[in-house]
Image 1 (cartoon, rainbow, N blue to C red):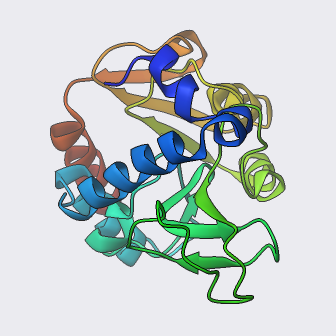
Image 2 (cartoon, rainbow, N blue to C red):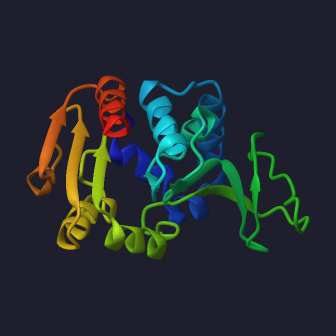
Length: 204
C-alpha cells in the first residue's frame, strides 16, 4: 500500500498544478499496472451476483480499476473515477484511455492538450454522489467489502444506510474503523468471504 503522505504528493489539484509531469508519470505507471492485473475471486463472485440477482443492485467502488467490469459486472459505479479514463479540463469530455498522458496528447473530443487522469483527488467531490445517497435510502441491505472505513464520505455510508432501515454487513480482512455500525461482521480474505456470501445470498 502507498502511504497517504506519498499519495498526497500526486493526488491533489495543487500537486498537478505544481508539478504536472510528476503527477502524470505516477498515473501513467498506475494505468499500465492495472491493465496487467486480473479480477480475483471476489470480483468474479460479485459479477455473478450482478448477473443472477433479479432485484435492484448497485456496486459502488472506491477502486479506480476496471476489474469489476472485466469480471463481468455491469451495475458498477466508480465514485472515485477510473484510471482508464482521461478527463479534458478544456471541454469537460471524458474518454476511455489506455495510453500515457505524459506527452500531453490532444483531447479526442476538442483537440486541446488538456487531459488529466479521470480520478477524484483529495479535495474533490466523488462522482455521482447524489445517486449513491439515493441508493442508500432505498437499500434493504448494505454490504461493505474490504475497506478501512477511514475515507469519507464512503466511510459514512453504513450509518446512512442503517438510519434508513437497511441491514448492514461487513466483509473485511479485519474490523474497520466503522465496524460498530454493522449488524454483522465476517472477517477473512475477500476471495473467500465474498464468494461464500454470494452463494448464500443467491441460494435463498
